[in-house]
Length: 321
Length: 107
Image (cartoon, rainbow over all chains, first blue to last red; front, side):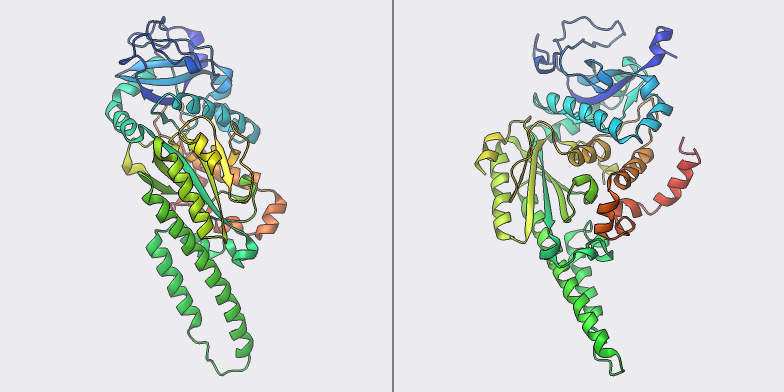
């Protein structure tokens, strides 16, 4: 153990986000927004680490938010009790939805606050180190990755656009979660449309059987095919919306639809996209969403943001989904 | 859209605007939106406390099941989760990984 005293072993360091060194080029300027003093503040005593105390936003577990600086980067961290955030308790607590919500909101609040000041790389929930020294070592080791990621998101924010198709409009109420949606919605635009077409063709083939009972089967098939077509049209419209928005963005991602219970909506989420947009083009992006909403009246578009660039804060493109 | 124009670019105010619904209350942010971001996005770095990425992914799966109410599940058709990409796994191997993890082998 590298912990300087036994008591230290009972706490861990939760990393909220990584930003450029708050001391660099900003003499005496800390992060007043979250109460992080400038680099002149007393450090924790850990070698090579300036971790200044804050009295602003609280981190997860109610702890104060601090800065750990190394390698030209600053990690925004808070100290957590390993009795609650240690390996075993954490695994247990993560199962508790109320606990999870509290922690998720606290983490997000810090990321958001820090992000107001400038480029921020949010870390995934529950990134916890033994102590500040370990955080500093991580910053040093991944310095180049973080620098590149920070460059990518500088001056940009994330917007979320979801498209909902109401069950009635899409004629796909119960079947929206069927194979066609589940397998297609996350595929690329081209292959999804292709798959949709080939499925329609397959459904149409053999519709001229002369055997008894074919009338029912034909009707049933036509019904299903009609439903398929409505679904396909909806999917195609969502693809078109995504492509149009992607053109207005520096980067874009499509994500799995949110679970109906979690999003509080029961209608079909046909698009869950995020878009990295220049801060000064946010208005134009919102206008584009509004224009698309008018153009595709059967889909309800929901715009959220601006968010910190959660969906685009990747240090290793290879592991990106 | 003018409301949007007013807040675009100011990082703090979260706003959700549906074409038919009033904007969501600022500041909070929809829980689903926040959870999917903090759990599924954001940079992954290996901390000292091992909560493997796998565990987190399993968590989101469980969470989706827990939060979706029985009523909702019924409305959606009882098998919606069987078709959900999260649950069938964006990697084919999720099922195998789950059993491994449940046996305590994830670490």
